[in-house]
Image: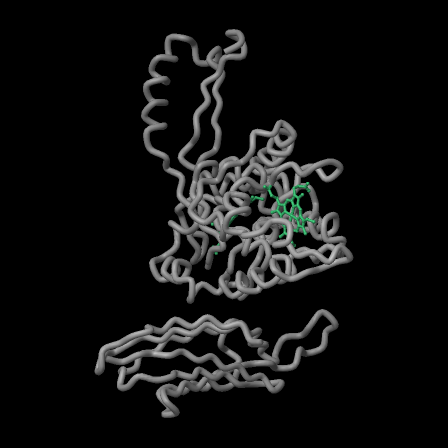
Length: 106
Length: 277
């Protein structure tokens, strides 16, 4: 199971701008570094981070090897309706991680 | 004061370094003047942690438990705390129960003296003693994520508490060795730790602010490392920076410096597991 920390409000007023912060444990190995044996360590990064709210995409980010290990992403969105926010990271070596948060909008 | 010959003025420099001037050298007439300034020097503690030296963005990152990357390791450590390991088939929790209770204040007093034959150990060393002696499992590799995760989890239980090194006499020699290493010039640059962390603390070394070198936040998530690291790793970095030959991993020199630095930071708040640039 992937190791993530997500910070999102549990409740929000309709129309409010809210901040969602997400941190994930990942080596973000660039593919440019030699290992102790002198050979290049294969690239292993998170390539895509997508967030949906009740199935509708609200945020997407393409990551690159220049992003540090354990990437931290913070973004803002407008609270429209109660439901589930799904954060999904995917990348090299078949990496997939998903985290869900429920937000009640009043 | 035992005799006039031994009598000395001792006080802590702003950085926390203990200064000592024998009274005989000063002459008793001056002693009164010094006592007055001593009182002044003691009224304000000028020690500052690496946390206080950081900019507001990094302080915010450390303070927010969902932005501080060290907290990812704490989650790993919390799981390891509850997992059975070794031939004894016991978890840390089986013996120590709720870490919030049993481990409160523990990190604030290490290095400490473990039961014979182990002697003085730092927190990682103490955890590995429990691995080998109590769980009958192989020791975790120094600087490995598994070991650092457990020490980050244990350290978190002391967050905000004052650093309180034990008065155990067995630590005195170790601290003295650490202090000697701290004050001795070494390496191609012919620098001592004190040259930077006492004499030039607060100034800049290239882009980095030179902190006073207090070990308040360990293990730290250092952005430059993109990883969690121990105080020993941090010290090794400074030794390499001085162009001195680093001691072997696990050498007593690291433990001695750690024991001295913790004593020098006595009473300062523990802010680990911290973030550092």
